[in-house]
Length: 481
Image (cartoon, rainbow, N blue to C red; front, top):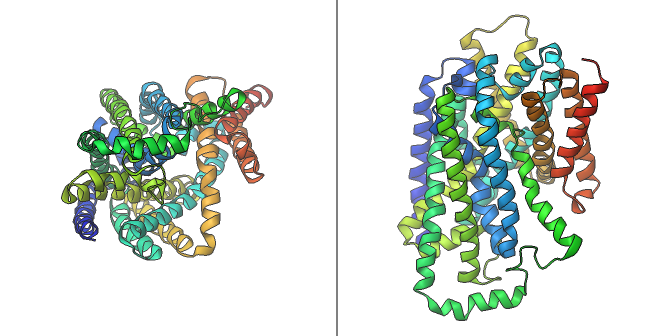
């Protein structure tokens, strides 16, 4: 209980400072462009750390360690797929998207695609933004649900109370400072995350060295219960089954290739080419270190608690941290982790509201808004999206719907828009009508594949990428632009 009280005190202090920092950064926001993409003037280090915090918060701190705890070395394939995708995105796409966003003066993800294929600009804006807003709207709701679950697990708060606290933390600075405030609060989260993922494994190894009895209890128990599955790279599967396991893990690679708008926006917001190189280096190093640390924390959980020692595998990271660190240090590290999970909602919220404002509402207004008018509209829409998403999440009858729709995001949005971005950047023949066909077919295929239960046989994360790619090629040659 003392540990819980310390964590609660540290968390309240941390969140208060975080809100203040976000509001402070928001003072420089003077226009809709500042609100949606920080005026395309981010320093490389801020863009890199924000992109990593947005992309990896709950995954690197809960999901991946939890999977490593449950499956052992099998989870290496997922990690390899993710790391390969992230490195490819930073090395091959980030500087190109930065350059393109500057050239076309693009303020949102869809704004870039539409301006790049200007002869189909109207329909690209409608179809692309509507797709992104719809799915990410529910994604925001899922983040509120996740925040409520995290606070319930750590502090035994009612989940609905946790949702309200989550919303109260992120909504004020997000409305005030927009993308800029979100980025600079993400920077703090990324720093705390990497400290946790570096310090945790180091302290854990020292802990194991000081507790040799574990080598005669938890570790042998884990290995005997799991047979070969913990130490097998295929989960003890063989033949075709082993191939499916490997491909399924590596399939995460395809979602990182420019198709996640909340990540690509960080590339687009970088100030110049020199800052883009700095961001690339920081992003790649952070990723390599973080993924090694996340896997190690999961494996440490096996050694410390045994295979059945935790009721919820996704809380292996907080459990390990509380076990190996003094309470005060553990409180700081766990607070940073919880804050990072909660604050993922701010990036999704800004993305949804700015796509709605810049691509669906403002282009259809009879009179062009002033800088202040555009900023006011963006803030009002951010508040509206936040409140509606919170309302949907708050009522439990919508919980299953939210989780179902979120399941389409990585495969559908990631796989489909990865093809759109890759072909837009690297294939001159790819045109606007082919973009529209790619989005419609890619999303429709994902929805049908997952909703009919086919996902359990083969992952949509690969199939959507392949179907969208095939559609893009056929449409480019068959449909006249």
